[in-house]
Image 1 (cartoon, rainbow, N blue to C red):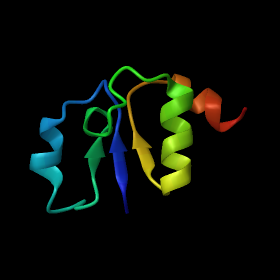
Image 2 (image 1 turned 120 degrees about the horizontal axis):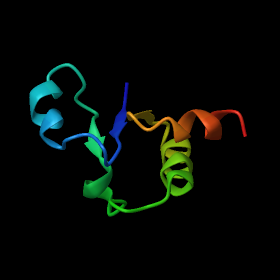
Image 3 (image 1 turned 135 degrees about the horizontal axis):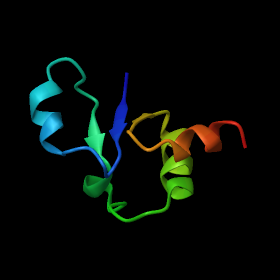
Image 4 (image 1 turned 90 degrees about the vertical axis):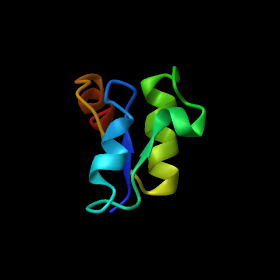
Amino acid sequence: MSLLLDENLSPRLIGRLSSLFPGMIHVRDLGLKQASDEVIWEWAGRKSFTIVTTDADFVDLRYA
């Protein structure tokens, strides 16, 4: 499973969880640090990544 960590989560989680989720990446590593939720959503969809976030706004995008 490929996971995309949103900006509101620490990029240090990648080092701690990489053995469990080797495909994990943080938005800052993609140049999406201050990108809108819509841009992140589109990128994740195109690349088949699951977004990991604490931002409730992504739930709204799911049903838009």
